[in-house]
Image 1 (cartoon, rainbow, N blue to C red):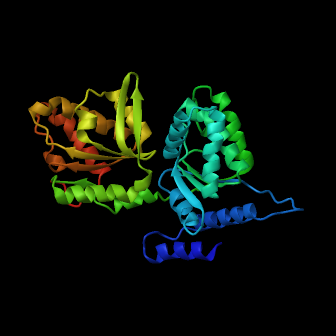
Image 2 (tube, rainbow, N blue to C red):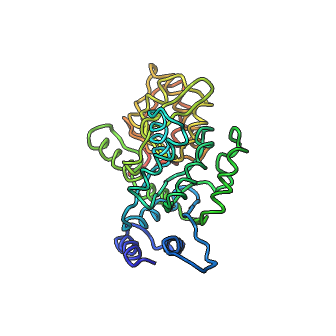
Image 3 (cartoon, rainbow, N blue to C red):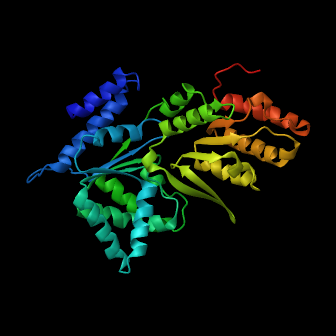
Length: 348
């Protein structure tokens, strides 16, 4: 393994920022080997040269951390969040009045002039437009000899599962399996959960200090340069999240509970994100009856789907609800909130 990468990893361990993980080190070694083979010119050899690495595994186990670590000392590298990459690409195609395929090639060619290693973080396919476009993009990456690193929560053959016209997407899966070294990072330790367990995740009261702490915790979990807008669709309703990654969302209480959202909306939100930061949760009085009912429904769904939450609230959990007619229902919500968040003070 590249000495500088190994040294950097060991520095994290020595600083107690991470726990030494043999599987992560093995992954780094494999990535380094594949990359070296990609750069070499073989005239007579049976060694397979892969175009890149595809790393998949569950949320929070260190995929992005390892790939970030690997590319840090490589010249001519660029990291994209998949959603950002596709948004920029669609904007480029839309703004130039030429054949779409030639637009696509000129866009990738422009990238190749600047970068020879691209890291695409959190690859996922949620819509038919991206599903039909993605193979063309990767063939062009191959044409212009760009080494690609991919992180994903999905094994390749489960990408765009049950999606519209999925048969047209299957050639991309075959392309990945043929041209990429596909690696499964298996790890029982959830580093994201570990970080949450070591952090305060229920902030109260709402003031400058708690607001700062709440936002700083969010920034620990995300790459600020990779935050994007995402829309969750339920029938004719669209819920817009201004700050999120593919599985972490930051939102205001009013965005989730002041509008007329229901059980199905909250189920779709819980399916979309594994960790949700909810700011400005008020104390519920009789005038906030409907808001409180929605909040109860939201927490129930997040709990059932095993989502993690971080809250910035006006009062402690046991003082949030003053509505007598909802006191029994809110007892269950309070119990779930205690279980879902780590409080730095005893329950009262």
